[in-house]
Image (cartoon, rainbow, N blue to C red; front, side, top):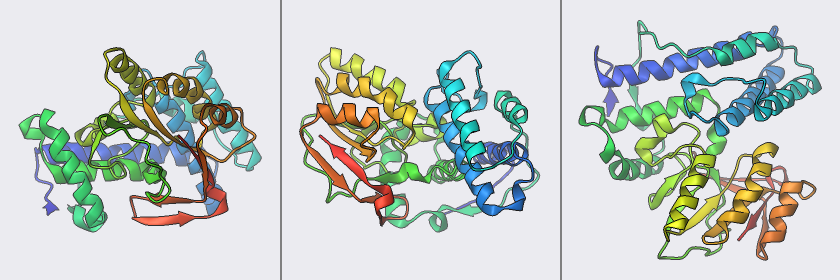
Amino acid sequence: MTIIMDDNTFTRSIINKELCIRKYINNVKYHSYNNPQKNNKIKNEANNAFSRLLMILLSFSSNHNLFNIEYDPHNKIDVYAMNKWEKEMKEKGIDYNKHKLIHDLNSKIRVKKLKYIPNHDVNTLILPNVLDRMRKKYNKFSKALDNKEKNFDTHVLAVYLRYNTFDAYSQCWTAHNKDKPNYKNKHFKTIELFGAPFNTNTDIFTFGSLFPDVDSAFGGFHNYRNLFTYIMDENSRGNYYNIQISPPNVPIILVDLVDKIQNLKKKNNLLIMFPHWTDSPAYQAVSKMFPNQKVIERYYDMWSERVVTGKSIKSTLFW
């Protein structure tokens, strides 16, 4: 189905917002570095580092609002993220404008009406099986939406644009089904602490999301820290879950997960996929908690429906 961008429609307002976010983020990226166009490799490295910085800020954000991402110099997490980003820039020899970046992070995204938006056909953007999986979840979770906001193709396109803007397709990587052990209790609902509309299965109860404003129509919750609080509250009421935890390869997030995993494993069934960083404190701590472990050298990319292999992506499954 082709989405026609008529004036004064819900579709136009949603896609306007996503394209404005894209324009804003691109401005932040390209104006925060001096002459990024000189070297495409440096530009890509800078963009990847910026995406990781935003991932940390979004993961630890208390207000879960993409339109008010802020850098707080008094917040140790924000300071750590910024220092990590600065170090990465210097190691790669990338010149940047820190004050411009912080100013932009503190600026709210202002959605303005664009003069022209092209028509889109979601069937040409997303593989049929992925789209079918998304439709099943949408039918399940969109019941809470207002009737005027129910438009599957529009919500799919919004999610596609958001993940494309933030280069967040690695959120669609998961362990191959052939590598996954049978860890589930058939009486428990399934939760993924980190997920995306493209990569979660249709039987999902909910998943932790970086972008709940667009992911909620497909079952997305707030970030993993809020989802952890929700699970602990539900555990206290006698509700237990099968929980898959496949975090991004960001050290501060892995460290933050250690205590949470320790608490979750008391009453829930867990399957954890960590990068195979055997010398990291987070890896070592989690390794001591689980007798069952398996080293894998492949991912299944549910976005492109292909297997990605290589020693550089080696991970360990714990259960």
